Each structure stands twice: as C-alpha cells, then as structure tokens.
Image 1 (cartoon, rainbow, N blue to C red):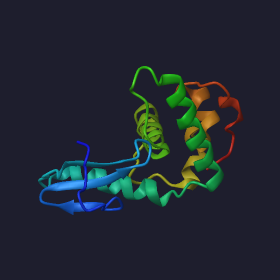
Image 2: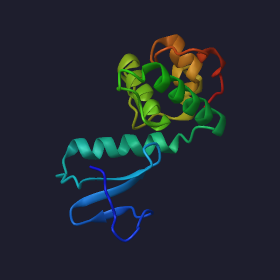
Image 3: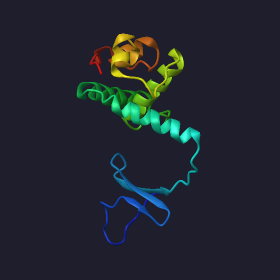
Image 4: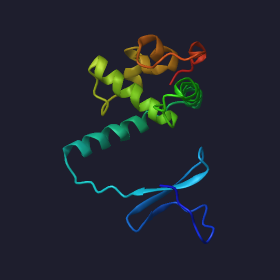
Length: 147
C-alpha cells in the first residue's frame, strides 16, 4: 500500500507497528507491507546458507553492471506483461537457481573456482543466455564481463 506522511517523513524506512516501510525509487513513493511472521524450519536454514554463499561469491563490478543493464533491457522487453524483475540481484538468483537445477549443483557450497573450472554458464550474462538459463534480449551479446 502507498504511504502518505502527515509530518513530511519522506526518508523514513524500517519496521513499526507490524508494518515494513521502504522507499521505491521507481515509483518515487514510500510503500508499506505487513511484517511477515516466519517460523524457523529446515528450509529457512538451507535458504539462508545458499543466500550467504551467493553473496560470498562477490561478482565483479563489471558483471554487476552487465546484470543491471540486462535487467533494464529485460524490463523494457517484458514491460507490457508486468512480470519483469525489479533488480539485478533477482535475475542473478534466478540464474543461479536455474543453473543449480539444470546441472545438479549445491548452491550452498559453490565457489568461484568451481564456476571457472567447470566452465559454468553463470560466469557471464552472455554465457547464461547462450545456455538458455536467461531469456535473450536485444544486445545480449555484449554482456561478456566475467564474474
């Protein structure tokens, strides 16, 4: 839901009264949503380990720039459908989970060395599109920066 502040707190973000507030720069609005209530279970621990490992891979700045540009091109291509990605990290996660499914990999233990030794398609956006893990967009051939 869109939030309207009476006291001009436009920069506010955080948690309060069971809601999470955040600023959406695309919409230029502060958005609020219900604070999710989660119960600890094995799936949470597994997803947490995978997320920590994907963050530890620490892609290069050039790779992140390629992902950001790819995400923008994908958003322009898929714009009318409304099912495009919001940020490059969402595309990166889709790529990694798709690759893990296709090649039976464990994302909780994946390393940069393993990515380069096995020539996995996540090493560049171009390789991922060629392998079919990402949708081809106009100009995808120029996204050759490696992780």
